[in-house]
Length: 160
Image (tube, rainbow, N blue to C red):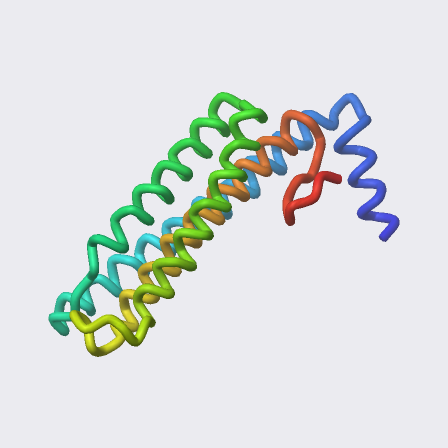
C-alpha cells in the first residue's frame, strides 16, 4: 500500500516523474504489443483450422469487427507516437462500440435461427474473441498515453 502511494506521488509530482512515466509507458506498451501479436497469431491459427475443416468464416460478421479493431489499434499506436491524450480518450470511447459489435456478432453466431450454418464453428468464436481482445489492447495503450501526458490513470473506466 505505502509503496504504491509512493510510486503514485513520484510519477505525478517529482520533476523526474515525466521520465518515469515515459519508461513505464513504453514498458507497458511493449507488453501490449506482444499480447497483440499473440492474438493475431491465434486468429491465423484458428482461421487455418477452420479452412482445413471447410467451416464457414462468416466474412459478413468478422470483417466489420476486424476493421473496427484494426482502426482502433492503428490510432492507438498513432496516439502513442504523437502522445495525444485527447485522441487516446476517444479510442477508449470507440472500444465501447467494438464491445457492443462483438456481443452482437456472438449472438448472431450462436443463434438457433441460423439455418445457413447448422453447426457452431468454435474456431470462428475464438477469432471473434481475439479481434475483440485487439481492441482491448488498443484501449489499454490509449490509457497509457493519457497516463504519460497527464499522470492520470483512466484504466478500468474511472479516472483516478
